[in-house]
Image (cartoon, rainbow, N blue to C red; front, top):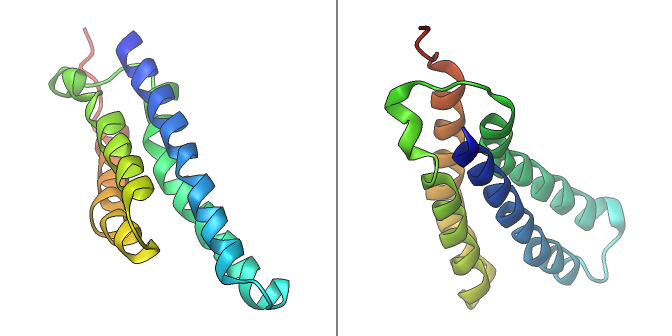
Length: 124
């Protein structure tokens, strides 16, 4: 159970690392426009994405027991988030950074959360 909590905390910390370049790009592209026309919708989208990325961490931290089938797969979540953070910081433009997030990382986080949340642990 300790590995689940470590994986959850690591994944949550790495997910927060995605917040910095996203907010930077939101401020950069909304320069010269009013707050509610440009920056506010960007910030709402950033925080919705952040909720999606932190959702598996919340499941790993607050769920007490997992199915034995999934006990060794805790480390997949921080690895995927770490690769995403690496891609974001090494990408040349926001499109090259955001496309893998939308196509790979966000669906992985939702599916990972649903699997770990919905499949019950065996009772002894």
